[in-house]
Length: 165
Picture 1 (cartoon, rainbow, N blue to C red):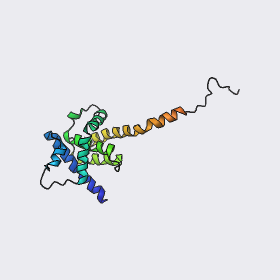
Picture 2: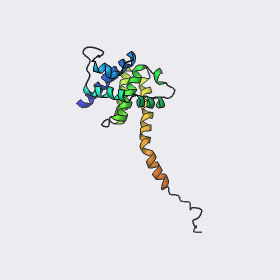
Picture 3: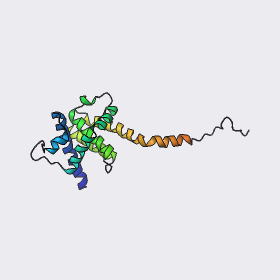
Picture 4: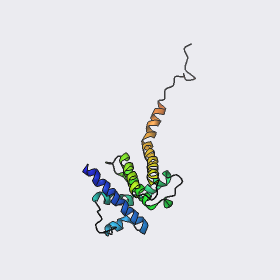
């Protein structure tokens, strides 16, 4: 239970820094490296540092996923805090193996409820991340589908098979 609570707080800290980074248009790794946090008593756990560095390292892929999944929303038109929450969640979904996708989504939805830029931020975040989760599940399915299609069994005889009449 303590680990869950610590990670929840770390995610909130990471979102705060990702948000700040976006607002001042400066790389979040630079902000972290220089220790420039929103206030003096800002807690920045190791897990949060790993998250923001991971987002920074994979920002192009994360943003591509978000652009593809956010119907009718250009990334630069999203509320800044929602974009920070989404980037963090997508990073966790793609690269943090010990966090189930459902946990990443639930945590992001809770962050959106608490800090979201719009009244419907939590629904928006949930919808975008749900689409990405379905896409991720689909990555493993094509091979299984191809195998199933190859061995598809039909009750109908093939044209060149004799029938028993």
